[in-house]
Length: 341
Image (cartoon, rainbow, N blue to C red; front, side, top):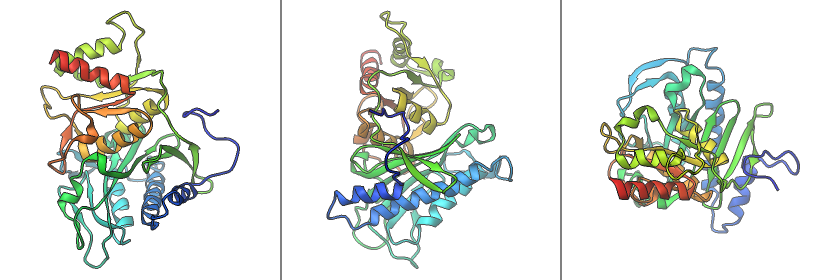
């Protein structure tokens, strides 16, 4: 039997379009709109991948001279990725509204186009500060059903807890381009075959391995962490109780770190600290979609005290601590925080 980290090398070739359509067949009430939306996101991924793989050959490296809503200087590929996703989805009639990590406010659908029943939130290029160093970067997306009735979508459509997600996923642009997604019935991964320009099923039914191998955290900030987080880190390294510790792996691109731990088992954590008491990662664009994927793969995500998916967002660019990976590792983090902080 193939495990989650093995690539399918025999049997029928399943494209992402076929996989999405087969998933739709399980829901007789489905109209095909979500199917088309997911396929448009895959198309956006192909376009973005074509730019990331040419980054050293064309003028897409470096800074764009703009600062986004997070106060971060935008990279040129950030802008390209953001525009690609927006322009491929703003006219289809499938969406009521969009929101991007790169925009201070919601992205309204033009009055020239019809509006639909879905809401798309996305981080167009996660880890973009690593672009100049050819470290993997990614795109994260989250899809909800709108809550408003008719007309243009509104801010409240974007401020839904993760439990209401319809689908979520991410693309990772590295030595190969992968798309991993879930529509609430498990997690599947697809690798882009550049020779035919199509995503092919390579990682069916992804489950986080029960025996984890890695932990991922930026220990350069360890002195800022609370006593509970520092104690948890010692425990996970095996210093507390004589148990065998996990190996540290940290890239600095959330998608890359999460993807490795999804396939190999482990935990990623970016806690609150004395400089960022509300946490650093974005609830709606990063934490919620990856938490959805983790739970569908048998894992768990927390803000240190409660499930990420249960948090009611109050602001479009709300930040949060994040602990995500094998359930028992994340629950252990909650225990250390509860007993020490």
